[in-house]
Length: 175
Image (cartoon, rainbow, N blue to C red; front, side, top):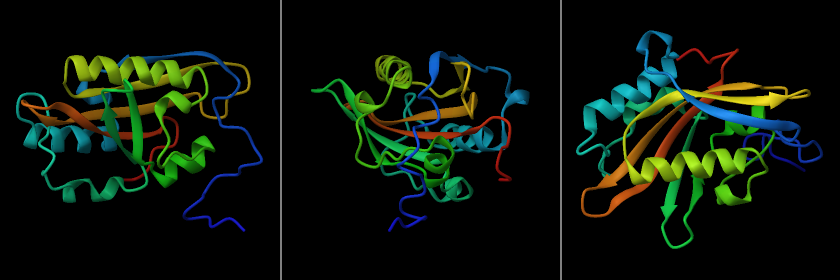
């Protein structure tokens, strides 16, 4: 029997993006277009970032309202991949997929290629990213998602983790 808190998605159905033909991750530089969740993650990043990364020891208390809408990914340079340490439960339910412990390279296309390229670019040139993910195709329940990605790490180690906020663009949570 499935536990709806720990396993909030229906394994008998395909993930939301399974029928997507393509997609794009688009930056949104205009702060007035950001969702409250994007703004909250940006404020946390701007308050704590040093040399474009948030130190790993930084408290995350300010991000409490985003619980369920946040992922934490670890960077694995040997694999050139990213592992979900935390996969937000609200996201898992909407996307109909879980991810705790999963590698980005194990995701379905086009999500896999989009996320690998996006995270690799932020490892190479760390910075706060705020934008949207749009899927193209016919039968996609959630075509557009808002996202904010904050790199964590140190100047000596580079980016070691990402904190990622995401939610569907058309029914944002009240933060």
